[in-house]
Image (cartoon, rainbow, N blue to C red; front, side, top):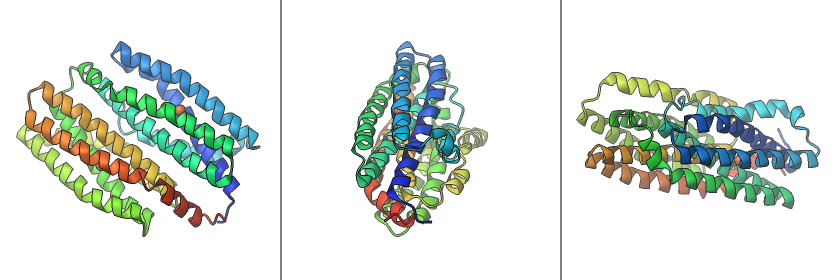
Length: 315
Ligand SMILES: [Fe+2]
Ligand SMILES: [Fe+2]
Ligand SMILES: [Fe+2]
């Protein structure tokens, strides 16, 4: 179905608006489960910033003559993205909460990068500038969370090393599914190559986690339990709702890589804490692979946006 660049820009603004509303909900409860005063303060401060983001995005929508309440179907659809990302497990420990939040901030970074890119193409300088300025605050919050991984592990004293290993194993299972399905959506593109290359790495990461779990003689039920929890992410629903947008796929994959980065950052610290230097060593190596994959995906944002707009018949 052909559409105009203006319509697409309004759609991306609407998506970003619903991502901010989702963030508001999450940030209101996050300080209560942070388990650490400094972490709690980071969430509280970002709540204030997020209220400002929501307002600024809403004003841009209104300035463009779009009434957020009239685009409810779009809101519901975009809301699904944030909802599903957070549904991978109930963040019941400070560690998981921090990993979620770190990934979510990167989803926002991706969403604002994509918004800026559409706004540039549509010649809407005000929206492009707003997107770049909010993006910096999301990125700064992500950096504050990255600086809190130690605190998050310390604030989760009951989490055993095997549960961090089982989580990493389960997340890799979801990553395999994402990358396999993603290749189809990415079509004949560099993004598809990036996914294919990382798929091989991802399978080897999962095998490494399996081996570390066996080394710790962990029960298969623990693995199953972790897989079920992560299964809440429900990739099938996500892809069913977003069938034709390489741009959103790239953004989601970028956020997902950061969920993996966070999982291994926590694992590395938990391993060091319990004296398992081999697990700490492999976690550090895998973090390098995940970071490289995230950067490679990010480098494809513009091309993915071109492909998306072409599919949508935007002149
Ligand atoms: Fe935000
Ligand atoms: Fe944020
Ligand atoms: Fe990955």
